[in-house]
Length: 237
Length: 113
Image (cartoon, rainbow over all chains, first blue to last red; front, top):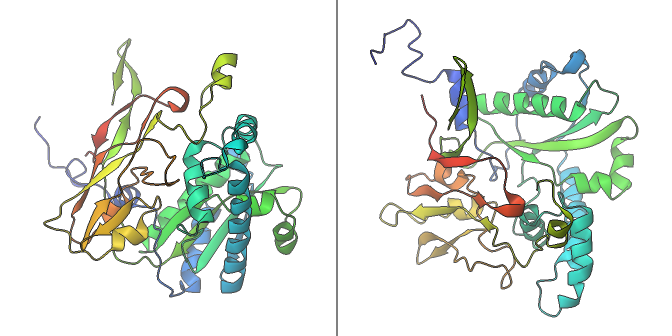
């Protein structure tokens, strides 16, 4: 096909926005250096301008830049995950009798206790995987349950806006939902942050300066996409 | 996990049997690996280790009965993107069957123009 050179050269190169989207990797190795305050505020601005159903803006952001709070919350989550592991992990030597109990729990809560996230539960409980990976700034995202339609989705959109804004500034981010356990299974952290109705935890973002240059393109699986045109349907990948 | 019938619900796999999930794999070009260990520190699944100053993937034994949590590579590509000498490539994607099956997936492809 004859590629016509257009003014913007769209067909031959990604736009700067696309580059940020495609090169964004979840960063799990951060420098100790704190992120400048203005950058965090700019990231929050990107979240503030996210689209939401009925323009309800059903989110509440909590920024934690206090080392002690981050480490206390991390150890609280690690303690809870250790407890989960003790109750659920029947693969350890001598714990075969836990199997029926664990299987009942898996059946009752099969999405959260899926074997795939359980691998991470196990790693965090054994201290082989950090919760926020040592990031100096953490943004907790809470949804306002009174929001229009599906507030979880709106929080996700706002979060992705913030993530992309952060990466465009050279920062690294990682979505961390394991912090949910601190809000779901203990009252302490809800009280500490004053979280009650109508707010509920959705996810959190670790924000910090990455070690090395983690942003880059990697291959990903293609997904089946149905394409309707000219009265017929084709599936493209 | 999709909508399951009664029998399938009863046969739901536990943590000892994850054969229905094929973990992703990365390959390390040992000629280019400088042994800096960044990938080992960054891997969220604890899947990479150093052997003789070169990075390599931890051996994967099919089930997790031995060391739990070993080599559960999700194919996130963090190591490949982070590697300063470009020695790591994602070679096999995360594959899911039966209970864990989600949308139909194709091959691993880099961003296309």
